[in-house]
Image (cartoon, rainbow, N blue to C red; front, side):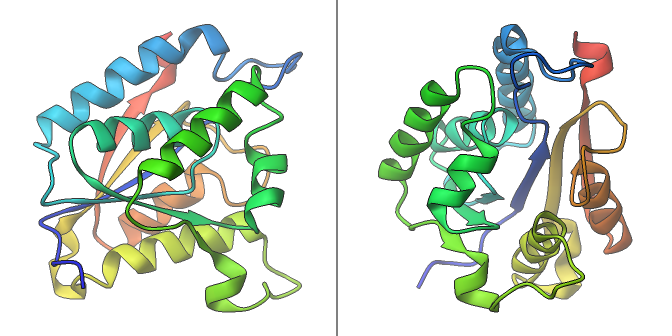
Length: 195
Protein backbone atom coordinates (compact mmCIF):
# COMPACT_ATOMS: atom_id res chain seq x y z
CA UNK A 1 0.00 0.00 0.00
CA UNK A 2 1.25 3.47 -0.89
CA UNK A 3 1.77 5.95 1.96
CA UNK A 4 -0.56 8.91 2.30
CA UNK A 5 0.86 11.70 0.14
CA UNK A 6 1.94 15.01 1.60
CA UNK A 7 0.10 16.78 -1.22
CA UNK A 8 -1.96 15.65 -4.18
CA UNK A 9 -1.21 17.50 -7.40
CA UNK A 10 -4.00 17.45 -9.98
CA UNK A 11 -3.45 18.71 -13.49
CA UNK A 12 -5.85 19.91 -16.15
CA UNK A 13 -4.96 21.84 -19.25
CA UNK A 14 -5.05 22.26 -22.96
CA UNK A 15 -4.04 19.61 -25.43
CA UNK A 16 -1.57 20.68 -28.09
CA UNK A 17 -3.63 22.07 -30.96
CA UNK A 18 -4.66 19.80 -33.78
CA UNK A 19 -3.26 20.83 -37.16
CA UNK A 20 -5.40 23.54 -38.71
CA UNK A 21 -7.23 24.48 -35.49
CA UNK A 22 -9.27 27.60 -36.34
CA UNK A 23 -8.42 29.50 -33.14
CA UNK A 24 -5.03 28.44 -31.76
CA UNK A 25 -5.01 27.68 -28.05
CA UNK A 26 -1.82 25.64 -27.46
CA UNK A 27 0.36 25.79 -30.60
CA UNK A 28 3.00 23.04 -30.82
CA UNK A 29 5.82 25.59 -30.82
CA UNK A 30 4.77 26.71 -27.31
CA UNK A 31 5.50 23.30 -25.72
CA UNK A 32 8.93 24.43 -24.36
CA UNK A 33 7.31 27.46 -22.68
CA UNK A 34 4.58 25.31 -21.13
CA UNK A 35 7.11 22.78 -19.87
CA UNK A 36 9.27 25.51 -18.32
CA UNK A 37 6.26 27.01 -16.52
CA UNK A 38 5.02 23.64 -15.25
CA UNK A 39 8.47 22.70 -13.99
CA UNK A 40 8.92 26.07 -12.30
CA UNK A 41 5.59 25.74 -10.50
CA UNK A 42 6.35 22.19 -9.37
CA UNK A 43 9.66 23.46 -7.97
CA UNK A 44 7.89 26.28 -6.09
CA UNK A 45 5.50 23.69 -4.63
CA UNK A 46 8.44 21.54 -3.57
CA UNK A 47 7.07 18.54 -5.48
CA UNK A 48 8.95 15.36 -4.60
CA UNK A 49 8.62 11.68 -3.73
CA UNK A 50 6.25 12.45 -0.84
CA UNK A 51 3.58 13.63 -3.30
CA UNK A 52 1.04 12.11 -5.68
CA UNK A 53 0.17 13.48 -9.13
CA UNK A 54 -3.12 12.71 -10.89
CA UNK A 55 -3.96 13.54 -14.50
CA UNK A 56 -5.41 11.96 -17.64
CA UNK A 57 -2.29 11.89 -19.81
CA UNK A 58 -3.48 13.72 -22.93
CA UNK A 59 -1.05 15.17 -25.47
CA UNK A 60 0.18 18.54 -24.27
CA UNK A 61 -0.18 19.82 -20.73
CA UNK A 62 -1.10 16.49 -19.12
CA UNK A 63 1.94 14.66 -20.44
CA UNK A 64 4.30 17.58 -19.80
CA UNK A 65 3.07 17.68 -16.19
CA UNK A 66 3.40 13.92 -15.72
CA UNK A 67 6.90 13.85 -17.23
CA UNK A 68 7.99 16.75 -14.99
CA UNK A 69 6.57 14.94 -11.95
CA UNK A 70 8.44 11.73 -12.79
CA UNK A 71 11.63 13.79 -13.06
CA UNK A 72 11.01 14.93 -9.45
CA UNK A 73 10.23 11.38 -8.22
CA UNK A 74 6.54 12.27 -7.68
CA UNK A 75 4.30 9.20 -7.91
CA UNK A 76 2.08 9.64 -10.99
CA UNK A 77 -1.28 7.97 -11.51
CA UNK A 78 -3.06 8.32 -14.85
CA UNK A 79 -6.86 8.18 -14.77
CA UNK A 80 -8.30 7.62 -18.25
CA UNK A 81 -11.87 8.49 -19.28
CA UNK A 82 -11.85 5.66 -21.86
CA UNK A 83 -10.06 2.40 -22.52
CA UNK A 84 -6.46 3.17 -23.45
CA UNK A 85 -6.82 2.65 -27.23
CA UNK A 86 -9.83 4.99 -27.35
CA UNK A 87 -8.09 7.52 -25.12
CA UNK A 88 -5.07 7.58 -27.43
CA UNK A 89 -7.36 7.98 -30.43
CA UNK A 90 -9.28 10.90 -28.90
CA UNK A 91 -6.78 12.67 -26.65
CA UNK A 92 -3.34 12.08 -28.13
CA UNK A 93 -3.32 11.38 -31.87
CA UNK A 94 -5.38 14.42 -33.00
CA UNK A 95 -2.70 16.84 -31.71
CA UNK A 96 0.07 18.17 -33.90
CA UNK A 97 2.78 15.50 -33.93
CA UNK A 98 0.24 13.04 -32.54
CA UNK A 99 2.41 9.99 -33.16
CA UNK A 100 5.29 11.60 -31.26
CA UNK A 101 2.92 12.32 -28.35
CA UNK A 102 1.72 8.70 -28.46
CA UNK A 103 5.32 7.55 -28.09
CA UNK A 104 5.81 9.94 -25.16
CA UNK A 105 2.67 8.57 -23.51
CA UNK A 106 3.92 4.98 -23.88
CA UNK A 107 7.39 5.91 -22.59
CA UNK A 108 5.86 7.63 -19.58
CA UNK A 109 3.55 4.69 -18.87
CA UNK A 110 6.56 2.35 -18.86
CA UNK A 111 8.16 4.44 -16.10
CA UNK A 112 5.17 4.47 -13.78
CA UNK A 113 4.80 2.15 -10.84
CA UNK A 114 1.02 2.07 -11.29
CA UNK A 115 -0.80 1.11 -14.49
CA UNK A 116 -3.27 3.68 -15.85
CA UNK A 117 -6.71 3.30 -14.31
CA UNK A 118 -9.69 3.24 -16.70
CA UNK A 119 -12.88 4.93 -15.56
CA UNK A 120 -15.35 2.36 -16.90
CA UNK A 121 -13.39 -0.47 -15.25
CA UNK A 122 -13.60 1.23 -11.87
CA UNK A 123 -16.88 3.14 -11.97
CA UNK A 124 -18.89 1.23 -14.55
CA UNK A 125 -20.34 2.65 -17.75
CA UNK A 126 -21.00 6.39 -17.87
CA UNK A 127 -24.63 7.43 -17.49
CA UNK A 128 -26.16 8.36 -20.84
CA UNK A 129 -26.60 11.98 -19.78
CA UNK A 130 -23.01 12.51 -18.58
CA UNK A 131 -19.98 13.44 -20.65
CA UNK A 132 -17.02 11.09 -20.08
CA UNK A 133 -14.49 13.93 -19.73
CA UNK A 134 -16.68 15.72 -17.19
CA UNK A 135 -17.12 12.48 -15.25
CA UNK A 136 -13.36 11.91 -15.37
CA UNK A 137 -12.74 15.37 -13.87
CA UNK A 138 -15.05 14.47 -10.98
CA UNK A 139 -13.28 11.11 -10.60
CA UNK A 140 -9.85 12.78 -10.57
CA UNK A 141 -10.94 15.17 -7.84
CA UNK A 142 -12.70 12.44 -5.83
CA UNK A 143 -9.53 10.34 -6.05
CA UNK A 144 -7.50 13.27 -4.73
CA UNK A 145 -9.95 13.92 -1.90
CA UNK A 146 -9.80 10.26 -0.81
CA UNK A 147 -6.58 11.20 0.94
CA UNK A 148 -8.52 13.17 3.56
CA UNK A 149 -11.69 15.20 3.12
CA UNK A 150 -10.68 17.36 6.07
CA UNK A 151 -7.31 17.94 4.47
CA UNK A 152 -8.55 19.50 1.23
CA UNK A 153 -5.65 21.95 1.41
CA UNK A 154 -3.50 18.97 0.36
CA UNK A 155 -5.26 19.04 -3.03
CA UNK A 156 -3.61 21.42 -5.47
CA UNK A 157 -4.80 21.83 -9.07
CA UNK A 158 -2.30 23.05 -11.63
CA UNK A 159 -3.97 24.23 -14.80
CA UNK A 160 -2.51 25.34 -18.13
CA UNK A 161 -5.45 27.26 -19.49
CA UNK A 162 -6.58 30.32 -21.42
CA UNK A 163 -9.49 31.00 -19.06
CA UNK A 164 -12.12 30.18 -21.66
CA UNK A 165 -14.64 27.42 -22.09
CA UNK A 166 -13.52 24.14 -23.56
CA UNK A 167 -14.31 22.49 -26.86
CA UNK A 168 -16.97 20.54 -24.98
CA UNK A 169 -18.03 19.49 -21.49
CA UNK A 170 -15.40 18.37 -19.02
CA UNK A 171 -12.69 20.87 -19.84
CA UNK A 172 -10.36 22.81 -17.58
CA UNK A 173 -13.02 25.38 -16.62
CA UNK A 174 -15.12 22.54 -15.19
CA UNK A 175 -12.15 21.14 -13.26
CA UNK A 176 -11.27 24.55 -11.79
CA UNK A 177 -14.89 25.03 -10.66
CA UNK A 178 -14.97 21.58 -9.04
CA UNK A 179 -11.67 22.04 -7.18
CA UNK A 180 -12.63 25.50 -5.92
CA UNK A 181 -16.06 24.23 -4.84
CA UNK A 182 -14.35 21.58 -2.71
CA UNK A 183 -11.86 24.00 -1.14
CA UNK A 184 -8.75 22.89 -3.03
CA UNK A 185 -6.02 25.22 -4.19
CA UNK A 186 -5.61 26.30 -7.81
CA UNK A 187 -2.45 27.50 -9.55
CA UNK A 188 -3.32 28.87 -12.96
CA UNK A 189 -0.70 29.04 -15.69
CA UNK A 190 -2.54 31.54 -17.90
CA UNK A 191 -1.60 30.81 -21.50
CA UNK A 192 -2.82 34.27 -22.58
CA UNK A 193 0.14 35.67 -20.64
CA UNK A 194 2.62 32.94 -21.55
CA UNK A 195 2.39 33.28 -25.34
